Length: 307
Ligand SMILES: NC(=O)c1ccc[n+]([C@@H]2O[C@H](COP(=O)([O-])OP(=O)(O)OC[C@H]3O[C@@H](n4cnc5c(N)ncnc54)[C@H](OP(=O)(O)O)[C@@H]3O)[C@@H](O)[C@H]2O)c1
Image (cartoon, rainbow, N blue to C red):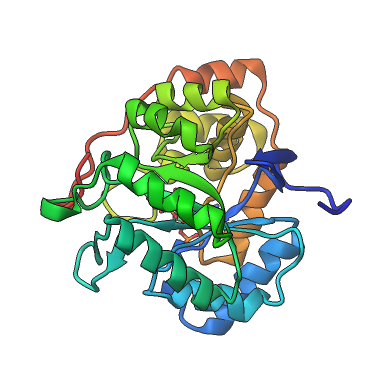
């Protein structure tokens, strides 16, 4: 890690130091041009972001290729995190299907290596389908986590991946995965959806990074936005910041092992999100926000999503 100040302060992703404020690249395949995507990615790195989340099934491959086009040769301290367990179908409303078998996981890592132009993907999340939202695994796509971890460990032993994370897992699956050496957990979690609090606490106790997806409420339609909650808007008004910044600052304040990967295609939103790393919430504001609890209604309009 260089001496550059890191947005959100310093955090750890496995054994690797990263800024606590990272960037989620999922939406970049929707950016109108490769240049638009590159502008956002390069600005993120300029601002000190060194943790970028991606997957070979975003696009498919297009997000990885855009990351490579924008950032290679990669800054030495950049940690690219990918995920395996799904494949791109192009169908609507969710263009993904399960790809959970060990051979699927290996093929996805090979896709990442080729698309990103890397010899080793620093961290790869095993994206299970135990929890929603998202597609469910059926038939021969229902695979025991131990069989999947055996393949992930083999990929790590071969040097194709640097560290293993897990995603969309309940607390008991995380407990089973712990002996593999887990660097991070990605589950859906935000100020409005705290259903994964027990898993967060297990991560804190085990020194595992908690990297919530949907930190602002998601880029998918049908999910409530954190910034729209009246208590969030009120705290934001009092502080002269935006609701999105309050939502991100609350996540950082709530648990020290939290690393953030908010997604955006907009440089203005990126800058706003990075600046949320400097927002301090008073004890009174935190109390007010803590009291929101899980208020997120069931998502609607996204039928194939399970929850
Ligand atoms: N492990 C998994 O299964 C999984 C699943 C989903 C996502 N992810 C990862 O998690 C990342 C974050 O998830 P996400 O992007 O779906 O959800 P999110 O970060 O909660 O929300 C992104 C949405 O918020 C908007 N936004 C961002 N910054 C904003 C701001 N400052 N003010 C107002 N609106 C703002 C974005 O629109 P604009 O483009 O207009 O800014 C976008 O629609 C993804 O990029 C992906 O890398 C992982």
